[in-house]
Image (cartoon, rainbow, N blue to C red; front, side, top):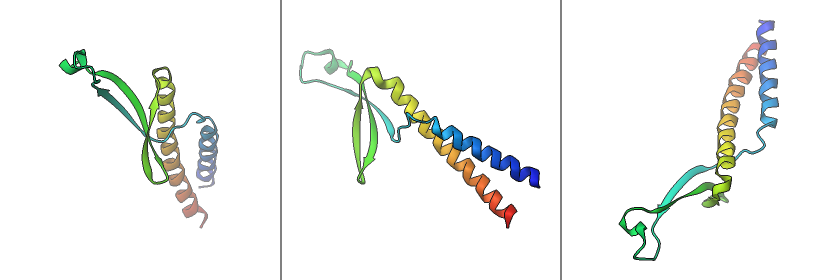
Length: 106
């Protein structure tokens, strides 16, 4: 039982250390949109729409805001979103570990 407690504490510490590396973390939803322009002769009015234009939808003061992501920053933004998903996994696992430790200690 002591071995289990020690291994859980070690795993928890490793997860905490991993969080430090999530410095590009972005919390939001990824949106890609295609659009038509005002030029009636443009190919976008025949089905070849402009885009994709990419946005990160974030929550600011209880309201959703769309933040434009320039093409040159798309990969960096996707890394940030992946890091947020990893953070959620870490939090879920740490919750499991801490609940287990609480049961074992009491």
